[in-house]
Length: 256
Image 1: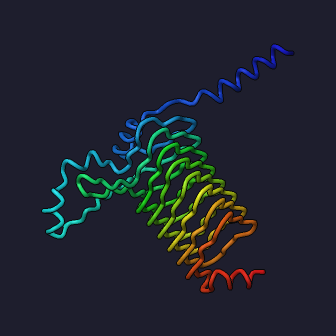
Image 2: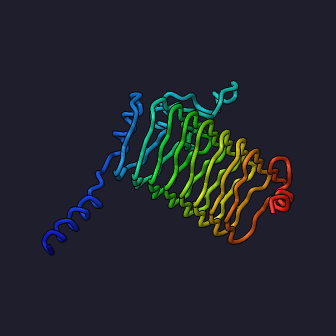
Image 3: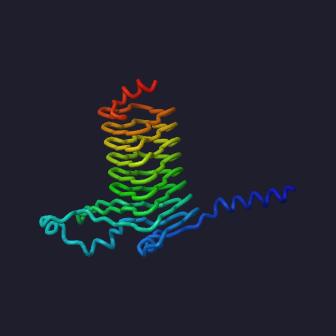
């Protein structure tokens, strides 16, 4: 019996440590060729530059001549295929936003189909500033261990950030959620910024722990506003916040 137990223990240990390694360049090649990407239980090595900045730079006009003639300094990459990562670990940056100082251009990736980063770990930066998510997006159960931003991001369809960990400051400033979004059971270890964020069909912060400050200044919420069991360690900045047309404080008084 002891022998069988040992075999079973070794089997599960092998499963736990058998995560495959995938090179980011292979993923980028598939996306570039219009393929759907579906990867689970893997470690991703190398910078995942979803903007394809290096491909775009050589053909871009010099900024001074281009901008003086009315051109834009923003270069957008539209990703057409589905992207799905489940239980994956990203060892390097995941970039859907790059401000390139030398050229003066800003590179952005938009997503035309479903995007999934479920139960993943971002060990380095996760940059989704200005990204458009045209279809469903799932970041549930994911850990953001370094800087992350969804500033100015637009979410048109279903979106979830449930059970998510933000280990560093997280910003959703100016983000636009057009459908209900849930952050239920998530943890923000440092400052959470939702300043100017628009929740057009409700939001859930049920059982969310904001261990430091929560900035919801100028935030607008239409629809359900679930803050049951929400905890904030330090201050809430709710100046000019509107919850279904009411100030944050008036909403709290009415809901009691």
